[in-house]
Image 1: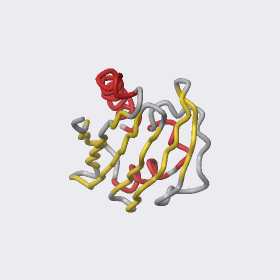
Image 2: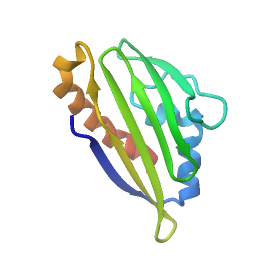
Image 3: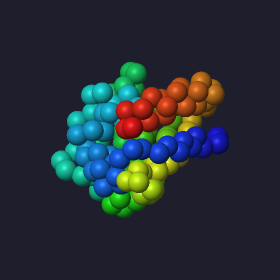
Length: 134
């Protein structure tokens, strides 16, 4: 499937945006369906893992890359899909931050039949998540 990419400018300095995204206490605010996520201790590091239940599915979130004030990447897995996500940040003019979020839905098993529906739902969540960060 084609990646879903969203680019947004946030009216906050890069350091503030990264601090917010890297604080794992906020994961439930920007990871789809992670209302019951138990936060990790401190900032995420590559290979840190968090688990949560959402929509009747057990989910695993594994951080795959963390580059301070540049990038946070993770993979979200459940029985229906694998969803690699890359969030890139860069400073822009006037203490603003350009945030680019790219995610590519990879349906597995029964999820392959539901692929188009899952992708539509993810696109809607991307917009909702972005509103929380701005």
